[in-house]
Length: 173
Image 1 (cartoon, one colour):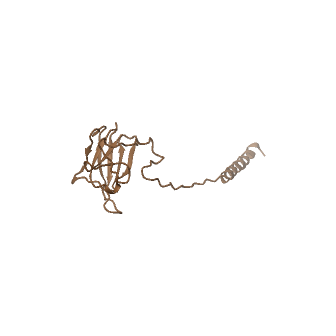
Image 2: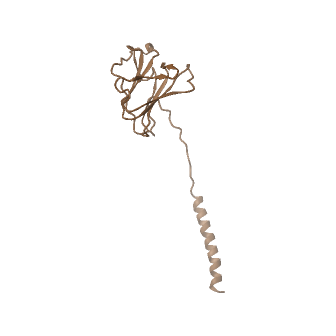
Image 3: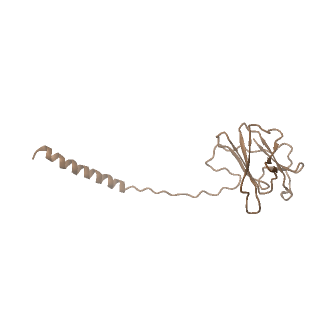
């Protein structure tokens, strides 16, 4: 027998044993994937995946908080952007006790727009009136991922009800 004929079966047998060894090793490992349900977060918290944390808001200087939540009424929304970022304010208006309007409204603010006195928001159809339970949220449009809210009108500390002028006031800092 010559050397050439011995090498060929040895290479084949070695290759088969090598493949079988790899298969045996692969069968020794298992991968388990578990999906965890996220815990529901209460209103006014920020998901851990967001960064940086939003800057808290402060009410417009002449806002007088209403001490009795039952006395809170419907009114206009005065918005003030005191940030150096362009922001979008979005509103999801509550229609009845369990439903919200189909189309949320939104407004865009340039950096520092309405920063001292604020601007009264309106809709194409006319005046905007916020009611208890409406949801307002703001987010930066510069790609930073910053956002403020969500604010539930009459249920969260912001926006603030100013009973002197019968309007809600929201200031982003």
